[in-house]
Image (cartoon, rainbow, N blue to C red):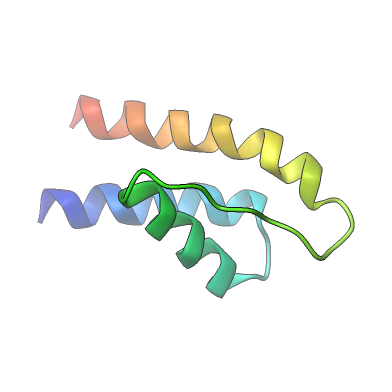
Amino acid sequence: MRNAVIVDAVRTEIGRHIVGQHELVCDVVRALLVESHALLGGLPGVEARQQTLGVAVGRADRAGRRG
């Protein structure tokens, strides 16, 4: 149950930065879970979102450690 809560927190935080792309958010979460890479591309402005993605993951990771 705890893992599901952490994954949901990560998905929610990433979804705040990658808006309207549910499939892409799920792919990024999968890549994080297996400690892999995710190359984001296609839409203008995605590169800026990649930079904030590290911040989002850090926040969710810290939230998971507190609980």
